[in-house]
Image (cartoon, rainbow, N blue to C red; front, side, top):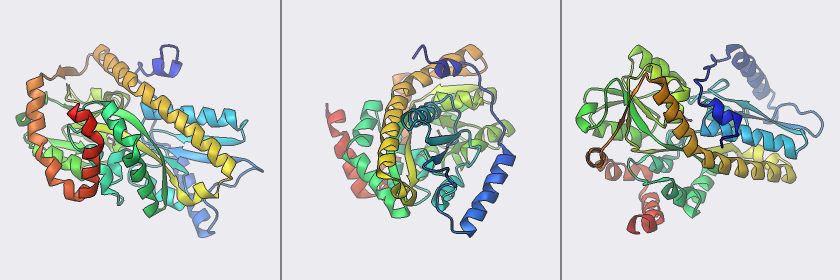
Length: 358
Ligand code: SIN
């Protein structure tokens, strides 16, 4: 890890590139023209060549950004440059609200939305990952993502023309605001930015806060302007979005998990030559495992960088404080089990049983 220049680069405050309006506009024009002509889902390809656009909303210097770059380089190496992966981090191409529609239209080939963003597009079962204090550690998460339940969840994406190719960890979320958030009473009256997940919204309400669902790319601005008072995210996202400049306090609550699923347009995926599909699938599996391996380290490095920056007070919760938060949000599990689906809840409990019963 120490030798990887990108990981070292992550310790520096990254420049936040402004959204490339011109590229986005040109791209949209190309998409409309392509849809009007009912063109195939991929860009016009040079002979035997293939170009895939991989769009996501976070910085390159995050577990997801680094895994996507690893995928890009593995594909380039193994295809001898014949298959090219173009990466669009930081919501440069599409944001939370339009990326799925773009994928379904064939305007982009690969995405890695957070698991919390699948409920809104018709897969509420994915919101089980958002249940607060569900997982004790990443090994618990992998009992689901790397087991039969995780595979069933991915297969279900076929209902809306998607293929799910695998999972990737970021890590555990922390709460931030312009005050410490150590007890349920600290949340009273706060507007907290959340992803578009009913489970996360219910969690914030259970704490006495008002959830405000906003795209990731708008979060920092909304915090800076006071539209929202606080938010939750793993430290790597907090740091690389420079949220420390607009939030005075980060409370290490570790109350929930953030992870991703890589998805492609099913029709596009099945239209590929089997050998190319195999090459891409294998490269992606390796890149995702790499991302999982560095996720913890990236969050630890981001926390160290944040401490050095000195602009945000960092609070560690006592066991009792965590227990109090946990008790406050416990009713969310039962209240949201119908939305997630009783069958999925049952399967999730079964999958976690060995971990929880020891
Ligand atoms: C992401 O990590 O992809 C974004 C998470 C968020 O929207 O909070």
